[in-house]
Length: 294
Image (cartoon, rainbow, N blue to C red; front, side, top):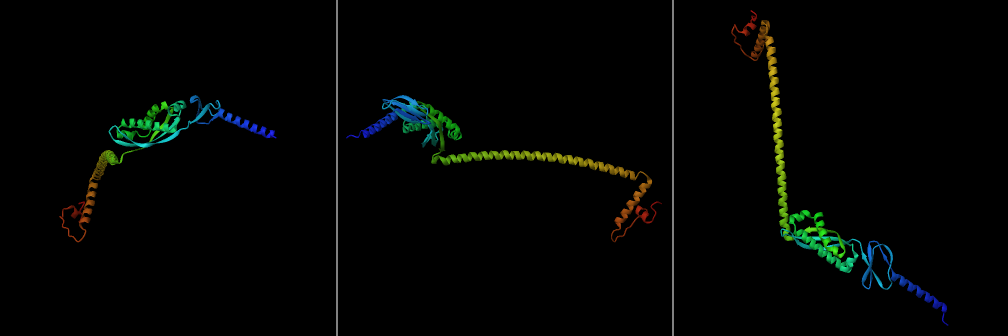
């Protein structure tokens, strides 16, 4: 006999599996930072970017997931020519993301490899155009934010038709071919030496200016000091003459002053073993003979 209970159980399992298959075919999940395109017979009928569970027609509609995250792509190094016909090597990286999934699917079939091929060509052209409009010195001066902005803006104009936004196209290395490096380094050294010589000359000029100003100040101070000294000497001599004139203002003072001067002269003359010959009418003889006041 057929086991009805077993048949019924198998039928239940089959129905559950069928429901799960149908349910799985009728739903899709959108995660954070991604798009999901829904195709029906190859034609896109819906694009979902809201995270969560979504529904579609089972067995007819197909869902395709597209990442909306920023992607880092390292572009191979390439040669570019400057405005003054100098060769330079650029090594660039790009950060890009899908912002218009419909264009991305229609133009590139949502293939990352094709997208990066297009990005590489676009960024290379933008880099070539930016650098070819500058001399080598201008390129070196503009590297960094200025070049990044120029390249990113031009590359974005091109990639907008593919539903892709270039977040940043940054030159991570800007180098010279080996045969150009020595000439450029020598020129840079020469320029730096010229700048150093200019600074040295300016320093010497400032030092000489300070030296001249200091000499001038010293001369002024010295002249003023000599003037003050001459004034003091004149005042001292005037005081001396005034004091001397007071010493002779009477006959008695004059005689006493002459007497003292005579004694000093005798004292100075009689040092050592000497013989002094004096006129009897001289002031010194008068002192020795006690006739100074006669």
